[in-house]
Length: 206
Ligand code: TMP
Image (cartoon, rainbow, N blue to C red; front, side):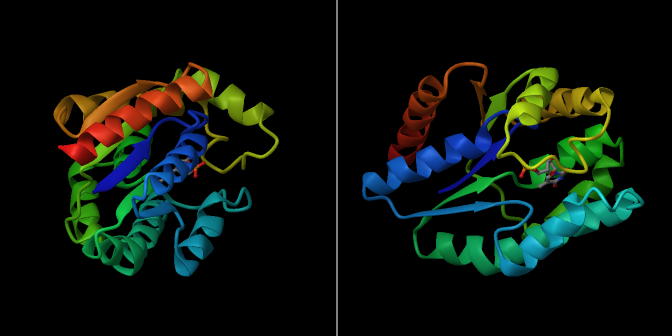
């Protein structure tokens, strides 16, 4: 089972995915918990280039290809081998982030993004995508006050950009309702986690 987590910045994905990984391991389920961009040695190096506030001159084409390079490495090096041995993979962001941020946020051609994505992922799609829904303004506020959170180059973009990303996620969900489950991320951490555990266990047992 390949499960991805998506949502606007500050939606609490990372906390929820960490709790879910711990819960599933406690249930005796083999879990690989990873993230994008990053998750491999090469991917983490690419992540630091992508998110550095020093790289303001980065053009959108370079941004897409760097996210896709990190993804290609992660899929080949970690995700496919884990799925092949029967491990459940939990990934903090995947190609839907490219469609939402670069496609809807930066308003780049979606068809081109689909082609690049297909190439980078070898066509691997998630079985389930959990969308942690939060108002983009509230999410950014959370990020700003969270001392542990990394404030990255994309967080620093204007609110209009983040509103388009949020809207983009809703379009992606409408296009593939069977793959996505929306979770209200404005509630307390434990309440959200309980709901996520129920959704995942139900899917694993199906
Ligand atoms: P996060 O690790 O805190 O979720 O930050 C990742 C940032 O990178 C977030 O602002 C979303 C952005 N991003 C893209 O713009 N495109 C992508 O394809 C991915 C994976 C992330």
